[in-house]
Image (cartoon, rainbow, N blue to C red):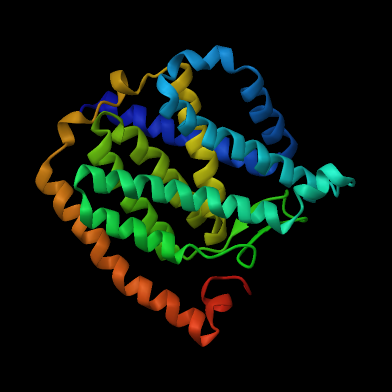
Length: 268
């Protein structure tokens, strides 16, 4: 890895962090930005090939627009039947389902790739994703932010699981994906609030996919193909499954004992 490679990853990480912070601070701007993104699709659509890629991109871009509408509806206390949809528990369940299906899709792809241990970690993530609407809400005080009360360990497991998935599925894009995953993980750490993890993950992924569709510079500046090694993949997936099993047990013990609200940070 040369110095340009490292500088590109660092520069990209800074860009992503600033972008996520901007979307956090300006809820109306985040809505307008992604609405305009959908409206101006001819500009970036040339970078998307095939129905599967279209489905993948739209499954990220459309929910981000829905999130923007929800943030504006709650923060600005919008009235009327239209806005009430985006204030409802049904909207929170929609966000939950999008995250759940995103994990499930990658888990099934891991199985198809023979990455069975990592697929097990993905299944654990699905099982331990705190359910909606209890552990999800859009704040009417803090810029209309979407809070999802996941634990620090869940965010870590998601990060290492998803990085392993990309390592197996798209080694060419591993460096770029590792960068966006790292920003999403460290952003809430710097804020001291694990419930911001989903916020950071959603916006970093949306920005990343937009760049890939508009001008895919990753193969030229962040080609991580040479990093790929089958032994690393096998043991990485095993590690993810191994650390996920005790967390799965712990998660359901908290729910059974009635201590999940405290442990997941809901009462903080």
